[in-house]
Length: 135
Image (cartoon, rainbow, N blue to C red; front, side, top):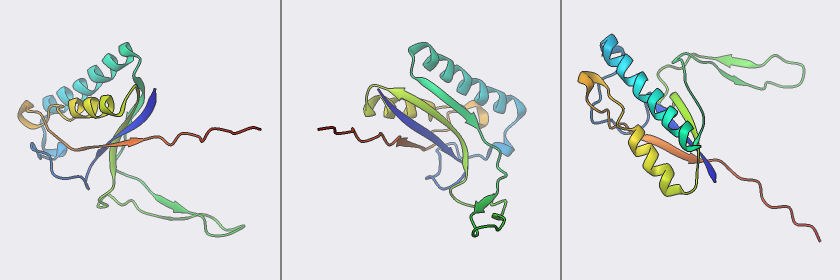
């Protein structure tokens, strides 16, 4: 099994087919979208492929180390940044092809007018530890 991170971007990915921003959806459209995501996750729980996932707030703060004994430097929020993440899901699947298959299915979540978004999702494998060699 291999773990993959499925990333849903606010911005930065190519435009979705049904590219209506979520803040312009009706409450019913938002509910349908969230329910699709929950049903998808529940199905993967049943197959043993679901690890974890959450939606993220569009607000956030960048933080960096500023030297010994100094407070961290902060700046933000950066809602305009192109790499802002809307949410994520971690899956644990047998093959890369299965990860791609699931990401494609997740891309079909409904959006405006109840039509599939066909959004682009980023699929990123987790790094695995190198084997320890003992002699």
